[in-house]
Image (cartoon, rainbow, N blue to C red):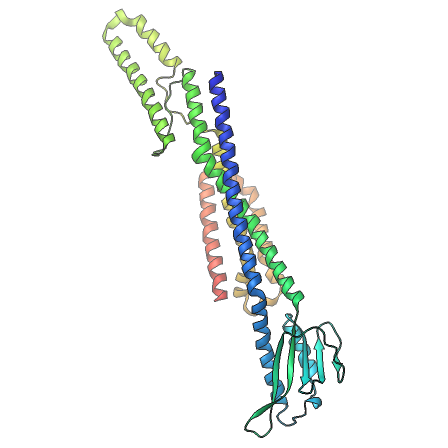
Length: 379
């Protein structure tokens, strides 16, 4: 290989490297921006949603207190509010405290998820209430008058925890999507750009050494396909000329025997009668195999989070049994491990391609069924 060819190949490989870096950088920035926007929108909507839910809970609590005051309008004599508040706080972790205050400003009862009960004249509240709802009493069976307020304090730690968990989920999805994107991008760049250019360089180097076999090319209408077409057309002209020369020398009879032998030796040395060859680099073929294997195992792993939902739907009343929920994971791993000894034998017997296609079809059907059944449980 000449110095010019080495320089051109070095520049080409360097260009491919920068193209790969640029593609990955653009994809990474776009996905990071989408993830950031998703977190910001979730954060902007989180607190209003929590306040709306707390207001609905407070309205229900205030309504129950109003019903309790139907026979005795004395808010100070309210009984059994603390156990009820404990239950509400347990069911709704976004609320940190519930406080009943009379119209005169007296704290009747307050209950906090992290503080003991505070009664009577003590006005030390566990935080500033974000929601204040009136407590009404029906005095004359015609109209209702406020006798106090229900003050609801939001648990901001719960909001921060929810946002943090959401951020971790987004980062996890971002990492997985970047891995998938890098795999697909490397395959596309290698298979449709880098690998085909390497194939052109390999063919040129092979032709320069006297190997005049044509290349197996795809039916593509891009510039690389045009280069392959031009090179193959040139090789075809040489091979056709070789065949015409052989026919012409054979027509001359014994007088051209020496020339015919010399031309035959030239044809064998330059491989003018050999079938076409595939100049695709081995790295490109291995990359395609790696992509198919990656997609196969990705499909297998995607189904795992939906297995508990699928089991719950099938189990019915036994869905709350912990061992039953873990059974699909154990069975899934056991089947995969048990299939290893005879799986290799079947692959060698029926061929790796047929075995892989059968496993892919079986996996696609099972994944589709599990996903459809799991999604129906949400509706």
